[in-house]
Length: 169
Length: 190
Image (cartoon, rainbow over all chains, first blue to last red):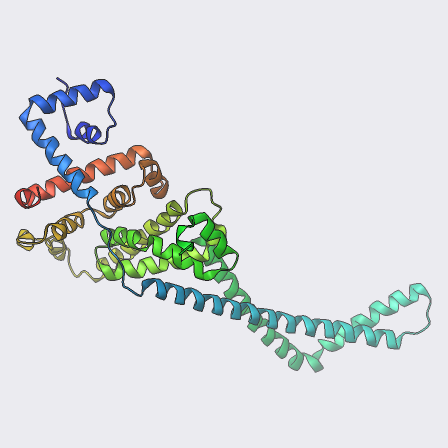
């Protein structure tokens, strides 16, 4: 007779054996007391496990989770709003600078030939940029811009990190 | 009351549309069974509840990434299982760093003494015995018997083959039988 091991008995309980294997194990259980004892023990364990009852977390659990979710949503929307404000502020500053340079350029150049106009335009824009970032204005303007860039950069990094973390799960 | 009869997919779609409160139905649906699995894996109520809360938050935050390719339960239990493993490895690292010498280790294994089992209620006794199973075995046993997952679904959660799931399941039964025999609890339990 084939050696009846625990694996075979387990598969017999789970009804995973072929018809032939099933017959062999069934006969062994009927005729061999040792096998019968092992089988009954395993079957009892199987039935005990079937009887496992689920346990509950604390009474307020669902409420606590929902509170955390709504708090999280509020923080997230606040972060988004703040990012939008910082970015629009930065955008307005950049637009303002570009607009100012163009208006100054247009005011200084009047009726010129087309080729000369392009050259003069580029020269004037260049001049304005050099004046803007020149020694005179650099210290004040640069500090303000760097500060804004640093602040917005930090929040942009934080937001990206947060989003990445969210998707990594 | 109507909400309770909806399928997981319908609830998720409703949450995705902005009905945040509907997520509570999913929490109520899965909290007990997931908590039981976590308790069997982590061996204590406090950690189980903390990890479970984290799992529900993770699932909520990633609900948009859930594409209905598998059942929500399978997807959610994967989060639960992986979170439990992370918690266990963190705890292990902490214990190892706090352990002053290797001699302290056997004390951990002797936490379940035969005397503890005497004259205890059968249900509590069984729970204690199941708690002696290693985390992976405890997870498989809970999903198979409590959640009534098929071996295919368990293999999907654990990312292992169906054959391996069956091996773990059979070993768990053998292990429980050995524990019962070792503790001389045959009469009390059987």
